[in-house]
Length: 208
Image (cartoon, rainbow, N blue to C red):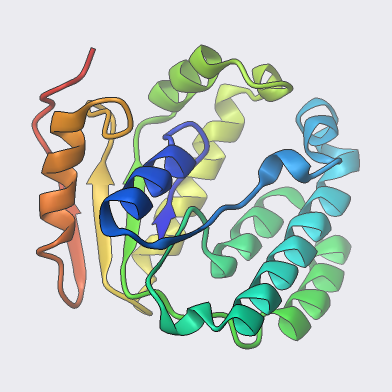
């Protein structure tokens, strides 16, 4: 599974990994969330429905996996079910979070444990630059303070994460999506990861 804050190319990297490894692909499909663009504009009023939509979307995806028996096959995903509460804690007030948790506990049962998590990280200013560069609808409203808080939430989440092998990748100066050289360097490191937590600070080769 590929994880990390917005702007680091998780989906594109997951696609490349799935192609290289001849694996099935499971994507977050954030563009289907009808509340997401409103969340960027009015985070306080739209956070709860946006978060619930993602939660139910994930639940449907997990059910589809069970029906197709992909739990037994190689699968690359650009999100983790368990990280949803990270965003809930970041964006919901106390009463909303309590209600969210009640729903989450009912839906989270049976989520698969990944064989490996690749956690992409970069400083908030790098995230902002890449978000601006790709120019997706609504994302221009994301501010640097939100990215700082989001990055901190990811750091805390993965500091305590021990459910699967974890590769923490400094993605600030590499481009494994567009650079074949950078992708190959990352791929070779992924192939060596075993149990535990690992850090990867690659030298940029194909960065523009």
